[in-house]
Length: 224
Ligand code: PGA
Image (tube, rainbow, N blue to C red; front, top):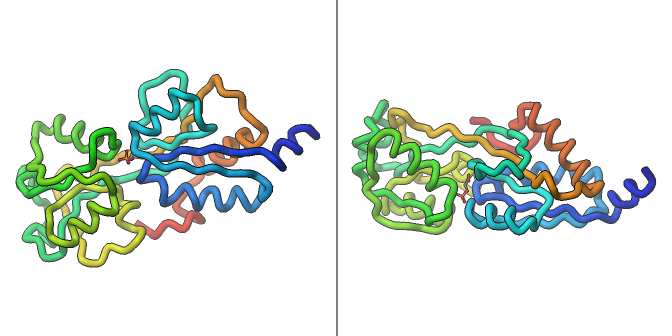
């Protein structure tokens, strides 16, 4: 018990999260850190593929995905929903229309994420099920850059609502497209075989409690 306490006072906690989770995980860490200010917390951000690679190397205590790999070595805790919304520039002809057919949206020049992105993976899986192909104009390796490219009129896209709520969305319209948004959610993952340090155990308990409670409150997330 005493050793645990010491571990908690001087331990490290390593997290690696996908890009869409980088907005809300810091809020979660903020509350946790207040209770454990001595901890050395390391926080990394990457796309889905990069984070999967880190799980394979057993690099971190925890990982956050919205599309966790199908890997029985990982234990998952469910978090709040992460909806992927269709966006266009404010003056786009589809902006303000209701029930836009997915086929019509898919014809617009589309800005997509790079290969390895979980956002792209979710969009492709969804469209494949619908039997629809996108009209891809450009591949861009960042949610923020896509958002700004859409604002500047380069095309339309589908991004996590959390990407849109943070950092401003002036000049953007969220489109009402049939079958959208794509409903996903975040998961906290850890390798079952990795020994839980006192700090990791504490964080896991904390995350489980949050996973059971509605996360929107208290995390600094804007209302939906
Ligand atoms: P990514 O993250 O698109 O940066 O991989 C998204 C996710 O998996 O939600």
